[in-house]
Image (cartoon, rainbow, N blue to C red; front, side):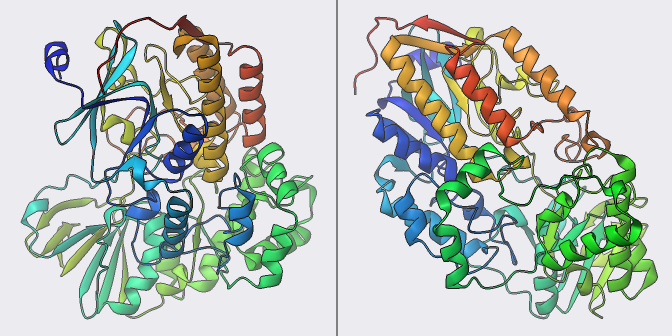
Amino acid sequence: MTEIQRDATPVAKSYDVIVVGAGFAGMYLLHRLRGLGLSARVFEQGSGVGGTWYWNRYPGARCDIESMQYSYSFSDELQQQWEWTERFAAQPEILKYANHVADRFNLRPDIQFNTRVSSAVFDESTDRWTVATDDGKHYSAQHVIMATGSLSNARTPDFKGLASFKGKTYHTGHWPHEGVDFTGLRVGVIGTGSSAIQSIPVIAEQAKHVTVFQRTPNFSIPARNHDLTAEYQKSWKDDYPELRRRAREESRNGVVGAMPTKGALEDTPDDRKKVYDEEWERGGLHFMASYNNLALDKTANDTAAEYVRGKIAEIVKDPKVATLLQPTTYPIGTKRICLDTEYYETFNRGNVTLIDIRNAPIEAMTPNGLITGGSEHEFDAIVFATGFDAMTGSFAKVDIRGRAGLTLKSKWAEGPKTYLGLMVAGFPNLFFITGPGSPSVLSNMIVSIEQHVDWITACLSHLREKGIGTMEATKTAEEDWVAHVNEVAYKTLYPQADSWYMGANVPGKPRVFMPYIGGVHIYRQICNKVAAGDYKGFAMTPQKQVATAAE
């Protein structure tokens, strides 16, 4: 959109704040903005609330954070009255919760569904943003907040001949709302990340045959999911204030759990095996917290990795298949560890085949299937469990232009640069929820969402009180923060993996470690200190006395 077009286009309506996305971040933002008395509009490209849990409806979709912790804490009445049914809630239940929140707080009147934001352009003459939507309308706002999610831009590989396939294709990140019946079908599943690990066992129960195409095996821990008792829920609800405080202020990942005090090599091999056995049977992501140095010390990490590889060998009956499923090229936990329900057991079924495409990549799609290793495999349906353009992909879908017409895409050409994962130099009054440079995907997302929303809304209140027109990160603060994020990351084993944390799953994307790994508790302290220090690292200018577009 050119400057002339934007100036000539009438603005449909003006707001104090425009929010992009109506997932858990956008909903809580709207609730808080209303509390400040600010006019706000949320644009959501889906037809309902829920964000990640609106789109990801694939078979077996389930949260990997326990339900009692993967929930809002801002309303005690809400957290006391809502009842979860399972330890790890499935997608339908989480979406039901999101809809309950939208109805309970009457959020829908200020959310515009089925609307995609195509561009956001900052006007330096008015210090306001012009936001364009895909229906051709334009809106004005002093502040724009991107609540588009870290894993919301589904990525389908650009295979040669993709359009020629005559069967049905599905992406786990954009699953049909009516569901899919694979009964009697030959199904190909491309990818073995989290969505594949959750969906393959369910699809295999329906399909005539499932062929799994794996480039890189993933470590997965049993979820050990189960129904929640009333007593267990009560134990959490009775102590929620303290448990929520611990998640926010003491934990690295926003999850309450035992914090180990010793390293893996301090135990004897027998004692260490007992610890791993207990965590394996307990199930859940806490396996990686068995010891305090698994993310830091390669030798310590090897003990955990070897244990899980041993478990895979025990479960999978065919030694060749077991070997293919055992990750060996990266430390355990440096790709987000997966939780499963009988994933490895599924490869013992007679109707499931595993094909390694590491050294024989998929060459092309054909009308009847796909070709790899010179052989054609025929399918009735193909499932792309190929992940997302993580952390930055959802922002890249919007043409965002800051001062002097600078595009965010060009600003981030060599990797995302932010200050605290919240703002970007050259883009005034533009905020990001759980953006690159914040704990985001390395944490319990709702804990990080609430922290960002609380910080941003407190900041907006401060700006109004002080008569501030614009706020943006300084280049120095931005550069120093990016350096700090990378410094902290490279003290760990995480950069050793070709993960989506590094952007490695997207061809041509710069290899930069995007989330902040210093911990939720430390990050919160840093953000609070910045705010208490009169928002050090941010440049502010007084409010301009200019007329804005009429309502």
